[in-house]
Length: 313
Length: 276
Image (cartoon, rainbow over all chains, first blue to last red; front, side, top):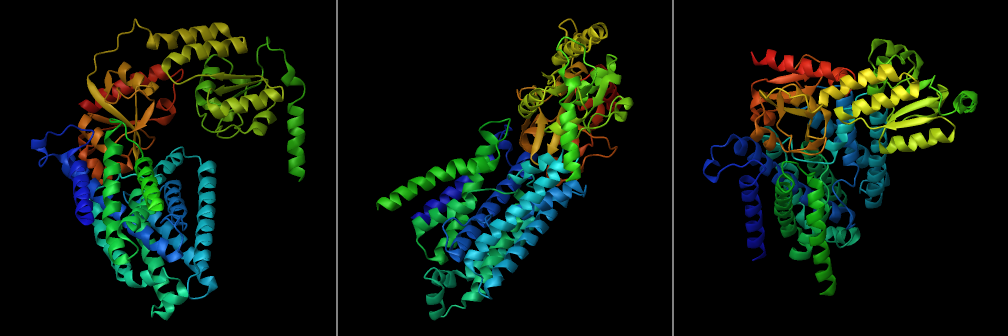
């Protein structure tokens, strides 16, 4: 029943995002419209893939660091991606893919730095060091970014911040294809780690007694979740709340077993972002809202409601 | 350390005598913190009294000889004070109001002027004329500026449609609140986002494609098409597919000012030439 509802919700969200938009496209012409085929459909698919990836990455990281506040962007990736993007603009790197590639490289650099810091405590990544290291690396990258923006002469750099706040404006079939080929690899690693993640929730020592190779699982999960997030940030900037709220909602509804939790977080995250993006495009048309604003406006009340039901019950 | 001491001394000197000039007297040492104001000051004959400008003030060429006090966003108070001005002209915005208050506190007269639309040019010019004692030349320039937007002027019926794209990801366009919208109307073009009341706004690419402007105008000093022209999703916009770009020089089109009339002529010529 819960699954049917979720799948129906996702299908409705995808359908609505293709049918609805600021441009009036008659239903009969839907299949022949350039706007629908080259703008709406790739944008809906990209939103679903990015939202789903953020949902799964969030769920996995929350289990890994055993902290309910964990979010795919908490571990320094957004700062690294932002620095990469701003550098690309400041250095006038041209080419249609310069910005996403620079953001991806920036996110990878932050990831590598945080990972290295995490290993200070030994081969088993220390969750506390990961969190603190992530926040520190993110803050440092953000400081350098701000310094570049305030010192550089180019006015356009200020607009880089807009990109950073997230949005799916750059959705195209190329971007969909890249994410559709890339994302399944880290996703498969995370789904395969479902059982060890369940054990990890019991605590690291008990997980070890029950046969999980704790150190290896943690490294794999951290890298896979971060690589997934790095791709998401490269194509759509930093979209908040999906990776924080969706895993919690999924956990409250489906329980703590990752075998069901992760797929639910994927479909739920995808549906939420598709729905939020449809609203962002349409409610204030012809203007557009940043999609992160909408994800927060929808996500937080739903989350509060569930928290309340959950604590009362 | 020595340098900081030096700066402190400079600021102290700056607080000294020239700043205490009574408000009635014409300004002799002016720092202009907006390219438009710099252009107006030079135009009314106060160019030799401009002792500080922003890095963006690149017109007239003589302005480049004036020392720069930084990008002015927000103004560097000490750099401005070090020029020992008796008048600082600022654009009326939040951070500048704070800066003006700081400057007043150290005894430097300031004036905050609105300059968002072509209608603001006349009043701003008259105010600057009064403050410099150059009322006559300012009034004649103000009359020219006023005539741009006077109700007696009937712009040609729109012969082309245009969208001003100031940023591509997310797409940001110019709306009715900007002087660029006015420039387009005066040049005989219709801004397809005239219904957006704000000076600029984020829109979805789909809206640009659906409104199907004949031309995409971009502020750019390069002769090449903008980088987003190569992005696949932008090719859903017909003008992008057809390479219909109007490249507007930032120094002329990026600000309202004494040359706005010239900007109108140039935009009209650009549209007519490109349409052939």
